[in-house]
Image (cartoon, rainbow, N blue to C red; front, side, top):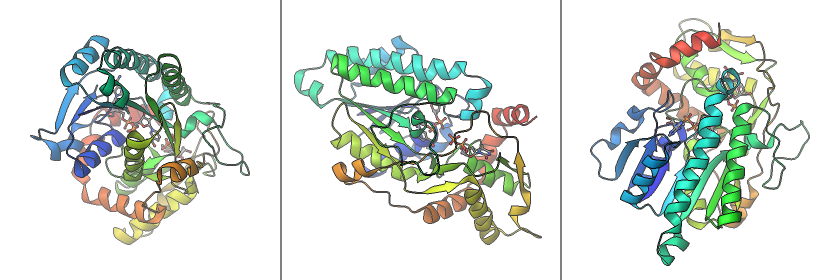
Length: 350
Ligand code: NAD
Ligand code: TYD
């Protein structure tokens, strides 16, 4: 079996669903269930012997040791993190705790477990750490995309703690020989995305008749990847990547935030027209995020060249699927927006 951390969050849960749809190997899902973890996303796996869930904090070494000893995974895929830049600006402590101390604790537990494995299992074992392009900092309009050799220059508490996590993973390979792999991916979007991030927030606010808050001038650029394409990239790297290597994952879809929101409004106008006017009428420009990175862009040629991976979705097909998913899954959205999230949004936009 494989052990997945953070498998109740957006990408982790999509990965678990995707994994079990393409292979029979069981998943041990280790998640603390913070505000971002939602077991409703995994409802279709209820009763499945292939999915074992453990509510555990990755900072809890004793709990990790006993899970590893009991379930004996052949690989670990590490998603668990605090992941929202705005929250990291409002309160960085949780980010240091989970993204730095948590990754360190997990690495220590995995190192002890891996070190005691029989030779064949030891050499086949892999630990894949899921990271972000944000560790590379911000690009100017004409700069080349981030490659695997771009120096780290994180600018937010989120990206700084992810960078620290990546450095620890690198050091555990270099120093102890732990067979680690790292993926640095661009912005994901798709089903089950928590409505605090740009795309799901705009869809849910639009449908609720609320304003669509665009930071600054809306000209910041992100490189968007449909979440199942990220999942397929992780599967490829896990099975065929070279230990110690890092792989950039991206969708070749650079868009300004304004382009993203316009496209979302146009899709909603087509799929769920308002009685009067366009969803674009709800757009509003608000104060910029402090330290807001201007542009992210990923050069994903290494992954294509070495492992033959390319994204299956274009931005247009992926975004249409996403909007349709939110229209078809309002109960999932309503469950999320009626909880903790609502209180935080109240404070954040006060
Ligand atoms: P998310 O915030 O939706 O989910 C994070 C999950 O981790 C949640 O289920 C949460 O309960 C769990 N978690 C948090 N702290 C924990 C702890 N201490 N112990 C155990 N579980 C804990 O995040 P996501 O968007 O699914 O991102 C997953 C990973 O992918 C993160 O490492 C993130 O940095 C990385 N990433 C995200 C994106 C993106 O666009 N969302 C892009 C590139 C990389
Ligand atoms: P986000 O989804 O938070 O991802 P990240 O900051 O990790 O890239 O934001 C994506 C972009 O959208 C980013 O440039 C900030 C911007 N943004 C808004 O303009 N308004 C919003 O309400 C949010 C959440 C983000």
